[in-house]
Length: 387
Image 1 (spheres, rainbow, N blue to C red):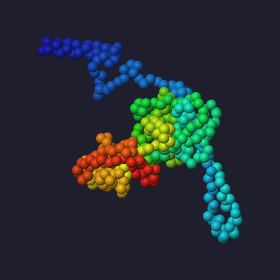
Image 2 (tube, rainbow, N blue to C red; image 1 turned 45 degrees about the vertical axis):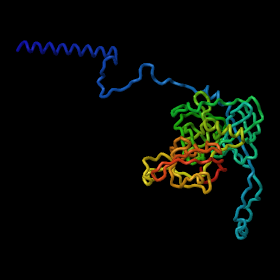
Image 3 (cartoon, rainbow, N blue to C red; image 1 turned 90 degrees about the horizontal axis):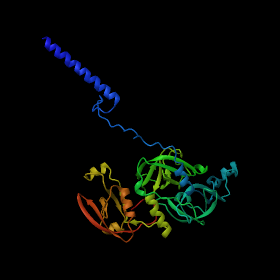
Image 4 (tube, rainbow, N blue to C red; image 1 turned 135 degrees about the vertical axis):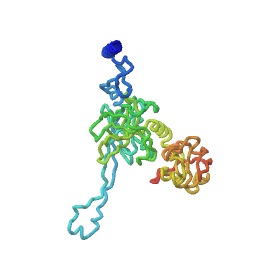
Protein backbone atom coordinates (compact mmCIF):
# COMPACT_ATOMS: atom_id res chain seq x y z
CA UNK A 1 0.00 0.00 0.00
CA UNK A 2 2.86 2.34 0.86
CA UNK A 3 4.41 1.80 -2.59
CA UNK A 4 1.09 2.62 -4.28
CA UNK A 5 0.75 5.93 -2.43
CA UNK A 6 4.37 6.77 -3.17
CA UNK A 7 3.81 6.16 -6.92
CA UNK A 8 0.63 8.29 -6.87
CA UNK A 9 2.42 11.15 -5.13
CA UNK A 10 5.29 11.06 -7.62
CA UNK A 11 2.84 11.08 -10.59
CA UNK A 12 0.93 14.11 -9.24
CA UNK A 13 4.18 15.95 -8.63
CA UNK A 14 5.37 15.22 -12.18
CA UNK A 15 2.08 16.49 -13.67
CA UNK A 16 2.34 19.66 -11.62
CA UNK A 17 5.85 20.29 -12.92
CA UNK A 18 4.70 19.74 -16.55
CA UNK A 19 1.73 22.08 -16.10
CA UNK A 20 3.95 24.75 -14.62
CA UNK A 21 6.39 24.40 -17.50
CA UNK A 22 3.61 24.68 -20.12
CA UNK A 23 2.19 27.77 -18.38
CA UNK A 24 5.59 29.42 -18.36
CA UNK A 25 6.11 28.56 -22.05
CA UNK A 26 2.75 30.06 -22.98
CA UNK A 27 3.61 33.26 -21.13
CA UNK A 28 6.96 33.56 -22.86
CA UNK A 29 5.70 32.60 -26.36
CA UNK A 30 1.90 33.14 -26.66
CA UNK A 31 0.24 31.07 -29.39
CA UNK A 32 3.05 28.53 -29.58
CA UNK A 33 0.99 25.87 -27.88
CA UNK A 34 -1.76 24.19 -29.98
CA UNK A 35 -4.48 25.11 -27.50
CA UNK A 36 -5.53 28.32 -25.75
CA UNK A 37 -8.47 27.26 -23.64
CA UNK A 38 -11.10 29.06 -25.81
CA UNK A 39 -14.42 27.37 -26.53
CA UNK A 40 -13.89 27.82 -30.29
CA UNK A 41 -10.93 28.20 -32.60
CA UNK A 42 -10.70 31.72 -34.03
CA UNK A 43 -8.60 33.41 -36.68
CA UNK A 44 -6.54 36.29 -35.39
CA UNK A 45 -4.61 38.80 -37.49
CA UNK A 46 -0.87 38.34 -37.40
CA UNK A 47 1.44 41.05 -36.08
CA UNK A 48 1.42 43.98 -38.50
CA UNK A 49 -1.59 42.63 -40.37
CA UNK A 50 -4.07 45.31 -39.32
CA UNK A 51 -5.66 47.67 -41.85
CA UNK A 52 -3.27 50.31 -43.15
CA UNK A 53 -4.27 53.69 -41.67
CA UNK A 54 -5.10 56.37 -44.26
CA UNK A 55 -5.13 59.87 -42.83
CA UNK A 56 -5.97 61.88 -45.97
CA UNK A 57 -7.47 61.77 -49.47
CA UNK A 58 -6.08 65.18 -50.33
CA UNK A 59 -4.09 63.84 -53.29
CA UNK A 60 -7.19 62.26 -54.84
CA UNK A 61 -9.18 65.47 -54.35
CA UNK A 62 -6.35 67.63 -55.70
CA UNK A 63 -6.12 65.46 -58.81
CA UNK A 64 -9.84 65.48 -59.65
CA UNK A 65 -11.14 68.84 -58.39
CA UNK A 66 -9.88 70.91 -61.36
CA UNK A 67 -11.93 68.65 -63.67
CA UNK A 68 -15.22 69.39 -61.88
CA UNK A 69 -17.10 72.54 -62.90
CA UNK A 70 -20.16 74.46 -61.78
CA UNK A 71 -23.03 74.56 -64.28
CA UNK A 72 -25.58 77.37 -64.09
CA UNK A 73 -28.56 77.50 -66.40
CA UNK A 74 -31.48 79.82 -66.96
CA UNK A 75 -34.65 79.74 -69.00
CA UNK A 76 -37.66 81.93 -69.62
CA UNK A 77 -41.01 80.83 -68.27
CA UNK A 78 -44.33 82.61 -68.49
CA UNK A 79 -46.13 83.15 -65.22
CA UNK A 80 -49.56 81.54 -65.03
CA UNK A 81 -52.51 83.86 -64.67
CA UNK A 82 -54.46 83.32 -61.46
CA UNK A 83 -57.80 81.77 -62.56
CA UNK A 84 -59.62 83.65 -59.77
CA UNK A 85 -58.92 86.88 -61.61
CA UNK A 86 -61.49 85.80 -64.20
CA UNK A 87 -64.18 85.86 -61.48
CA UNK A 88 -65.81 89.34 -61.42
CA UNK A 89 -66.96 88.87 -57.80
CA UNK A 90 -63.40 88.06 -56.69
CA UNK A 91 -62.02 91.09 -58.56
CA UNK A 92 -64.66 93.34 -57.01
CA UNK A 93 -63.65 92.45 -53.44
CA UNK A 94 -59.88 91.92 -53.82
CA UNK A 95 -58.97 94.08 -56.78
CA UNK A 96 -55.78 93.18 -58.67
CA UNK A 97 -53.56 92.27 -55.71
CA UNK A 98 -53.48 88.60 -56.81
CA UNK A 99 -53.13 89.31 -60.49
CA UNK A 100 -50.09 88.74 -62.63
CA UNK A 101 -49.12 90.55 -65.79
CA UNK A 102 -48.19 87.19 -67.37
CA UNK A 103 -44.81 88.52 -68.48
CA UNK A 104 -41.95 86.01 -69.04
CA UNK A 105 -39.65 85.47 -66.09
CA UNK A 106 -36.18 83.93 -65.93
CA UNK A 107 -35.66 80.86 -63.76
CA UNK A 108 -32.13 79.78 -62.77
CA UNK A 109 -30.75 76.37 -61.85
CA UNK A 110 -27.42 75.19 -60.48
CA UNK A 111 -25.61 71.92 -60.98
CA UNK A 112 -22.19 70.44 -61.63
CA UNK A 113 -20.28 68.92 -64.51
CA UNK A 114 -17.14 66.94 -65.31
CA UNK A 115 -14.56 67.85 -67.95
CA UNK A 116 -13.96 64.69 -70.01
CA UNK A 117 -11.72 66.02 -72.78
CA UNK A 118 -9.08 68.70 -73.06
CA UNK A 119 -10.83 70.30 -76.04
CA UNK A 120 -13.97 71.30 -74.17
CA UNK A 121 -16.44 68.40 -73.77
CA UNK A 122 -18.19 68.36 -70.39
CA UNK A 123 -20.53 65.74 -68.91
CA UNK A 124 -23.49 66.67 -66.74
CA UNK A 125 -27.05 65.52 -66.05
CA UNK A 126 -29.89 65.92 -68.53
CA UNK A 127 -32.12 67.36 -65.80
CA UNK A 128 -29.55 70.08 -65.05
CA UNK A 129 -29.70 71.55 -68.57
CA UNK A 130 -33.19 70.48 -69.64
CA UNK A 131 -35.02 73.26 -71.53
CA UNK A 132 -32.28 75.78 -70.66
CA UNK A 133 -31.68 78.59 -73.15
CA UNK A 134 -28.55 79.89 -71.43
CA UNK A 135 -25.81 77.71 -69.93
CA UNK A 136 -22.63 78.90 -68.26
CA UNK A 137 -19.79 76.80 -66.91
CA UNK A 138 -17.51 78.05 -64.12
CA UNK A 139 -14.08 76.41 -64.07
CA UNK A 140 -12.18 75.72 -60.86
CA UNK A 141 -9.91 78.73 -61.54
CA UNK A 142 -12.92 81.07 -61.58
CA UNK A 143 -13.19 81.53 -65.36
CA UNK A 144 -16.78 81.45 -66.65
CA UNK A 145 -17.54 80.20 -70.16
CA UNK A 146 -20.69 79.95 -72.26
CA UNK A 147 -21.62 76.35 -73.09
CA UNK A 148 -23.82 74.73 -75.68
CA UNK A 149 -25.59 71.38 -75.55
CA UNK A 150 -24.09 68.75 -77.86
CA UNK A 151 -26.82 66.26 -77.01
CA UNK A 152 -28.74 64.71 -74.14
CA UNK A 153 -30.01 61.27 -73.19
CA UNK A 154 -33.07 61.52 -70.89
CA UNK A 155 -33.20 57.73 -70.42
CA UNK A 156 -29.90 57.75 -68.51
CA UNK A 157 -30.10 61.42 -67.42
CA UNK A 158 -26.83 62.31 -69.12
CA UNK A 159 -25.91 65.31 -71.27
CA UNK A 160 -22.78 66.49 -73.05
CA UNK A 161 -21.85 70.19 -73.20
CA UNK A 162 -19.16 71.95 -75.22
CA UNK A 163 -17.19 75.07 -74.37
CA UNK A 164 -14.81 76.95 -76.67
CA UNK A 165 -11.59 76.47 -74.78
CA UNK A 166 -8.57 74.20 -75.17
CA UNK A 167 -6.12 72.57 -72.74
CA UNK A 168 -8.78 71.93 -70.10
CA UNK A 169 -7.97 69.63 -67.15
CA UNK A 170 -9.79 66.46 -68.26
CA UNK A 171 -10.54 63.85 -65.63
CA UNK A 172 -9.05 60.34 -65.74
CA UNK A 173 -11.54 57.47 -66.10
CA UNK A 174 -11.27 54.44 -63.82
CA UNK A 175 -11.68 50.93 -65.24
CA UNK A 176 -15.33 49.82 -64.96
CA UNK A 177 -14.48 46.36 -63.63
CA UNK A 178 -12.41 47.68 -60.72
CA UNK A 179 -15.27 49.02 -58.56
CA UNK A 180 -16.14 47.01 -55.47
CA UNK A 181 -18.59 47.40 -52.63
CA UNK A 182 -16.67 48.95 -49.74
CA UNK A 183 -14.30 51.03 -51.89
CA UNK A 184 -13.78 54.60 -50.68
CA UNK A 185 -15.20 57.26 -53.03
CA UNK A 186 -15.31 61.06 -53.07
CA UNK A 187 -18.27 63.07 -54.37
CA UNK A 188 -17.26 66.42 -55.86
CA UNK A 189 -19.74 69.09 -56.88
CA UNK A 190 -21.46 72.35 -56.01
CA UNK A 191 -24.11 71.52 -53.39
CA UNK A 192 -26.67 74.25 -52.71
CA UNK A 193 -24.55 76.66 -54.75
CA UNK A 194 -22.06 77.21 -51.90
CA UNK A 195 -19.04 76.38 -54.09
CA UNK A 196 -17.03 73.30 -54.91
CA UNK A 197 -17.21 70.72 -52.10
CA UNK A 198 -15.70 67.28 -51.52
CA UNK A 199 -17.47 64.63 -49.44
CA UNK A 200 -16.31 61.11 -48.65
CA UNK A 201 -18.00 57.74 -48.28
CA UNK A 202 -17.90 54.23 -49.68
CA UNK A 203 -19.60 52.34 -52.47
CA UNK A 204 -22.62 50.89 -50.68
CA UNK A 205 -23.92 48.77 -53.56
CA UNK A 206 -23.48 48.20 -57.29
CA UNK A 207 -26.04 47.60 -60.03
CA UNK A 208 -28.95 49.30 -58.27
CA UNK A 209 -32.09 49.32 -60.42
CA UNK A 210 -35.91 49.34 -60.12
CA UNK A 211 -35.73 52.77 -58.46
CA UNK A 212 -38.04 54.54 -60.88
CA UNK A 213 -35.51 57.35 -61.46
CA UNK A 214 -34.79 56.72 -65.13
CA UNK A 215 -35.55 54.20 -67.86
CA UNK A 216 -32.00 52.82 -67.95
CA UNK A 217 -30.88 52.11 -64.38
CA UNK A 218 -27.69 50.48 -63.19
CA UNK A 219 -26.52 52.77 -60.42
CA UNK A 220 -23.61 52.93 -58.03
CA UNK A 221 -25.04 53.52 -54.55
CA UNK A 222 -22.89 55.53 -52.15
CA UNK A 223 -23.14 57.10 -48.72
CA UNK A 224 -20.86 59.98 -49.73
CA UNK A 225 -22.99 63.08 -49.12
CA UNK A 226 -24.76 64.12 -52.35
CA UNK A 227 -27.03 67.14 -52.11
CA UNK A 228 -28.97 69.37 -54.54
CA UNK A 229 -26.37 71.00 -56.79
CA UNK A 230 -24.14 67.92 -56.82
CA UNK A 231 -26.06 66.60 -59.84
CA UNK A 232 -23.69 66.07 -62.75
CA UNK A 233 -20.62 66.14 -60.53
CA UNK A 234 -17.92 63.51 -60.20
CA UNK A 235 -17.77 60.41 -58.06
CA UNK A 236 -14.08 59.45 -57.91
CA UNK A 237 -12.13 56.63 -56.29
CA UNK A 238 -9.35 56.93 -53.72
CA UNK A 239 -6.88 57.67 -56.52
CA UNK A 240 -8.97 60.51 -57.98
CA UNK A 241 -10.23 58.59 -61.03
CA UNK A 242 -13.83 58.95 -62.25
CA UNK A 243 -16.08 56.01 -61.34
CA UNK A 244 -19.46 57.66 -61.89
CA UNK A 245 -21.52 60.82 -62.44
CA UNK A 246 -23.69 61.82 -59.48
CA UNK A 247 -27.34 61.98 -60.45
CA UNK A 248 -29.85 61.46 -57.61
CA UNK A 249 -30.43 61.10 -53.90
CA UNK A 250 -32.92 59.17 -51.83
CA UNK A 251 -34.50 61.73 -49.54
CA UNK A 252 -37.84 62.82 -48.16
CA UNK A 253 -36.52 66.19 -47.02
CA UNK A 254 -34.44 67.14 -50.06
CA UNK A 255 -31.17 66.76 -48.13
CA UNK A 256 -28.65 63.97 -47.87
CA UNK A 257 -29.70 60.85 -45.95
CA UNK A 258 -26.70 58.70 -46.81
CA UNK A 259 -28.13 57.13 -49.96
CA UNK A 260 -26.96 58.67 -53.22
CA UNK A 261 -26.79 57.29 -56.74
CA UNK A 262 -24.24 57.76 -59.52
CA UNK A 263 -24.30 56.62 -63.14
CA UNK A 264 -21.36 54.19 -63.56
CA UNK A 265 -18.67 54.92 -66.10
CA UNK A 266 -19.57 51.80 -68.08
CA UNK A 267 -22.80 53.61 -69.08
CA UNK A 268 -21.24 57.07 -69.06
CA UNK A 269 -18.59 56.18 -71.65
CA UNK A 270 -21.04 54.51 -74.03
CA UNK A 271 -23.57 57.37 -73.86
CA UNK A 272 -20.87 60.03 -74.11
CA UNK A 273 -19.34 58.53 -77.26
CA UNK A 274 -22.77 58.12 -78.90
CA UNK A 275 -23.72 61.74 -78.21
CA UNK A 276 -20.39 63.18 -79.35
CA UNK A 277 -20.36 61.02 -82.50
CA UNK A 278 -24.03 61.17 -83.49
CA UNK A 279 -25.67 63.84 -81.29
CA UNK A 280 -27.98 61.28 -79.69
CA UNK A 281 -28.05 57.71 -78.38
CA UNK A 282 -29.52 54.97 -80.57
CA UNK A 283 -30.97 51.95 -78.75
CA UNK A 284 -32.64 48.75 -79.80
CA UNK A 285 -36.37 48.10 -79.34
CA UNK A 286 -38.69 45.17 -79.98
CA UNK A 287 -42.03 46.51 -78.74
CA UNK A 288 -42.76 44.56 -75.57
CA UNK A 289 -43.82 45.60 -72.09
CA UNK A 290 -42.37 43.50 -69.28
CA UNK A 291 -42.77 43.10 -65.56
CA UNK A 292 -40.94 41.40 -62.73
CA UNK A 293 -41.62 37.76 -61.92
CA UNK A 294 -42.65 37.85 -58.27
CA UNK A 295 -42.92 34.68 -56.16
CA UNK A 296 -46.69 34.89 -56.59
CA UNK A 297 -46.41 35.12 -60.39
CA UNK A 298 -43.90 32.28 -60.42
CA UNK A 299 -46.33 30.12 -58.46
CA UNK A 300 -49.26 30.95 -60.73
CA UNK A 301 -47.20 30.11 -63.86
CA UNK A 302 -45.73 27.00 -62.20
CA UNK A 303 -42.21 28.38 -62.60
CA UNK A 304 -39.29 26.95 -60.68
CA UNK A 305 -37.73 30.38 -60.00
CA UNK A 306 -38.27 34.11 -60.44
CA UNK A 307 -35.39 34.43 -62.94
CA UNK A 308 -36.44 35.95 -66.25
CA UNK A 309 -39.00 38.56 -67.26
CA UNK A 310 -42.74 38.23 -67.85
CA UNK A 311 -44.02 39.72 -71.10
CA UNK A 312 -47.05 41.71 -69.99
CA UNK A 313 -47.85 43.31 -73.34
CA UNK A 314 -46.87 43.22 -77.01
CA UNK A 315 -47.21 46.23 -79.31
CA UNK A 316 -49.45 45.34 -82.25
CA UNK A 317 -47.49 45.06 -85.51
CA UNK A 318 -44.27 45.70 -83.61
CA UNK A 319 -41.11 43.57 -84.02
CA UNK A 320 -42.05 41.18 -81.21
CA UNK A 321 -45.63 40.81 -82.47
CA UNK A 322 -44.40 39.97 -85.98
CA UNK A 323 -42.00 37.40 -84.49
CA UNK A 324 -44.87 35.58 -82.71
CA UNK A 325 -44.24 36.67 -79.11
CA UNK A 326 -47.35 36.72 -76.93
CA UNK A 327 -48.30 38.22 -73.56
CA UNK A 328 -47.65 35.69 -70.83
CA UNK A 329 -44.41 34.40 -72.36
CA UNK A 330 -41.40 34.24 -70.04
CA UNK A 331 -38.27 35.69 -71.63
CA UNK A 332 -35.18 33.76 -70.51
CA UNK A 333 -32.34 34.92 -72.78
CA UNK A 334 -31.55 37.51 -75.45
CA UNK A 335 -28.92 36.56 -77.99
CA UNK A 336 -27.59 33.86 -75.69
CA UNK A 337 -27.27 36.21 -72.72
CA UNK A 338 -29.43 35.28 -69.71
CA UNK A 339 -32.24 37.53 -68.53
CA UNK A 340 -32.26 37.83 -64.74
CA UNK A 341 -35.04 40.39 -64.37
CA UNK A 342 -36.90 43.10 -66.30
CA UNK A 343 -34.09 45.63 -65.84
CA UNK A 344 -31.46 43.33 -67.32
CA UNK A 345 -33.80 42.60 -70.24
CA UNK A 346 -34.19 46.31 -70.97
CA UNK A 347 -30.40 46.79 -70.95
CA UNK A 348 -29.79 43.77 -73.18
CA UNK A 349 -32.26 44.88 -75.84
CA UNK A 350 -31.23 48.54 -75.65
CA UNK A 351 -27.63 47.54 -76.41
CA UNK A 352 -28.63 45.85 -79.68
CA UNK A 353 -28.18 47.82 -82.92
CA UNK A 354 -31.30 48.45 -84.99
CA UNK A 355 -31.59 46.02 -87.90
CA UNK A 356 -29.95 43.14 -86.03
CA UNK A 357 -31.78 39.81 -86.01
CA UNK A 358 -31.53 38.36 -82.52
CA UNK A 359 -32.65 35.07 -80.99
CA UNK A 360 -35.01 35.26 -78.00
CA UNK A 361 -35.26 32.19 -75.79
CA UNK A 362 -38.50 31.95 -73.85
CA UNK A 363 -40.88 29.70 -72.06
CA UNK A 364 -44.55 29.35 -73.01
CA UNK A 365 -46.80 27.09 -70.97
CA UNK A 366 -43.88 24.98 -69.65
CA UNK A 367 -42.45 24.61 -73.16
CA UNK A 368 -39.13 26.24 -74.00
CA UNK A 369 -38.94 27.81 -77.43
CA UNK A 370 -36.78 30.13 -79.54
CA UNK A 371 -37.92 32.93 -81.81
CA UNK A 372 -36.00 35.30 -84.08
CA UNK A 373 -36.87 39.00 -83.93
CA UNK A 374 -35.56 41.95 -85.95
CA UNK A 375 -34.54 44.81 -83.66
CA UNK A 376 -35.77 48.31 -84.50
CA UNK A 377 -34.71 51.75 -83.31
CA UNK A 378 -36.15 52.66 -79.94
CA UNK A 379 -38.70 55.49 -80.32
CA UNK A 380 -38.46 58.64 -78.17
CA UNK A 381 -39.02 58.06 -74.46
CA UNK A 382 -42.64 57.81 -73.42
CA UNK A 383 -44.27 57.95 -70.03
CA UNK A 384 -45.04 54.21 -70.12
CA UNK A 385 -41.76 52.37 -70.44
CA UNK A 386 -41.80 49.84 -73.22
CA UNK A 387 -38.94 47.70 -74.51
